[in-house]
Length: 382
Image (cartoon, rainbow, N blue to C red; front, side):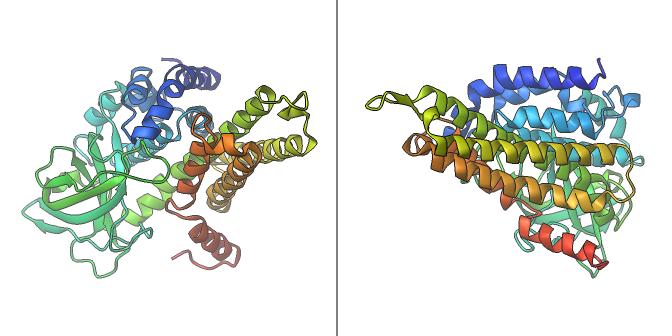
């Protein structure tokens, strides 16, 4: 398996162009699981992109991951979000050295046979995913999990869930533990379909755990160390990946408007829309925003890969900056595209909705603004 960054990026672009683009509109319209796209990603080895080489994975870092996410999201943001959550869950599994199924699960991931996801957010604590209200109980080397999880990407489709819950006996909500829960665990059900404004195909539905029992050995990391894993393992990869998705959506909207301006005519004036200076200015404004975010996010991905010591602040900034830029860019696209943009024969309307879904995905932009300011003021984040 090749480990060249450019090769992975080129392969992701090819799959996005040949498979994701072909199904993206149908996935969005029908709010269906992108089965063809996920199968293509798995078959091409992307599920194991960041899995360490000792388990057969490609062992790629944030730079390659960012490039792959950017390519996928430019065609189908729903597929890209499914892939992002899988990569985040995979990093938790890979770090759990005491988990007895670790190697077999990772090798199945590398082989394209296992898709995982995160189950962090809960109905009771909403977007504050770091503070579960559910609490595990432990009896005779088994753990019982009862929780109402919300917005679980890949709900009902993932092969496993990385589940957070307040640690057994803990009195503080942020003293949490992470567990590996297989999809066929008794008591685990998807409690409703996903019907959202944007990211319609990522199956981000509620999941109920009604007395789900797993072996204590399914704990991923130390007891009560869930928040630490969220911050050190999940947050960096999620921030880089979610930012790349926002950038891909903004880039798709920019290209969509460019093509529309070139192809559409004002026949009574003998002009194309591209002849109008005001619309050209809007296109230029969009492209500048996309190129600015591209440079910023590539720098952050590189800093993360190189072990930059002060990377937390840029990571917190990344999703807030990229998502809000995508919201602005897609708003300009719809305004400049007019009635054609509101119709569904262009991608602009879908890009517009997907950008807004990203803005309220935890950690939301407003929460990130607060975290960023706390970091600047030398205050604890929690």
